Each structure stands twice: as structure tokens, then as C-alpha cells.
Length: 131
Image 1 (cartoon, rainbow, N blue to C red):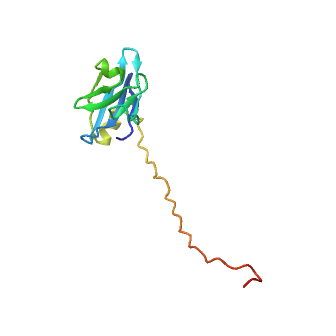
Image 2: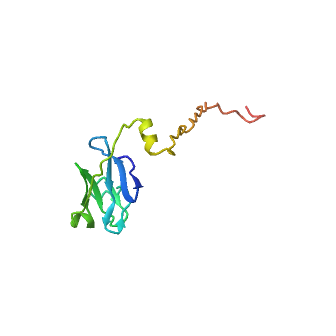
Image 3: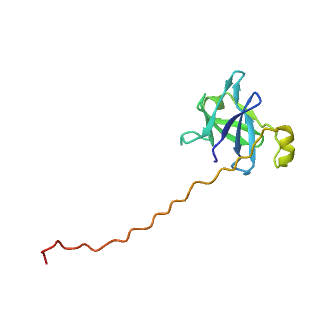
């Protein structure tokens, strides 16, 4: 599962991630309660059944169609689910710039590739004076 991005869209806390089942980008609200936003990360706890984990209840979550549903832990017992947030993809750059004139497209260079030449083993030499 790719790493989720915990963002704020306007005043709405959202989580943006790639759905591991469809490989499409998905966005969900991250409010557990009216005043309690959660942050999501990849679930590495093998005891929990889910793809993501939240930092508030430490519950596991999985995308199920149009919801991010708690599948294990305290939030699952309360049957918590985050509704999908609709958004547009593949918008032309010119259209985006009309609405967000200060938006900048950053070209982040890839990290340098470091190649290490293999070390060729050498034959041990005998100390001087010994044969």
C-alpha cells in the first residue's frame, strides 16, 4: 500500500491515497468525530486486519468501495467509516492555473544513482624475507 498523504483541503482534513484494489487515487475525510481529525499511515501491526492505521484510536482501516472503513480496533467496534470525497483528475494545467494563479509545478530531480565498483580480491602476499 503506498503511503497515504494527510492533507487539509480548504478547512477539511483529508487523506489522499492510492486504492490498492483499483490502483486509483482516492480521497476521504479524516474526521473521527466533530473535533477529532485522525492521521493515517500504513498499518504494520500484523495483529490488526487492515491496510491503514489511525493515530487517534489505533484502529485498522481498509478501502471498501466508496468508504474508508474501520476493520479492526475501537473504531471498528463503533462501525466508523470515512466517506469518499470527489475530486477531478487529469485537468489541463491551463485550467488549474486560472483557478490557482500562484500554483507552481515543481520538477523534483530524482536522487543521484551511486554505483560502487566491486572490489576484486587480491592474493595474499608473503611478508618480506619469508619464503
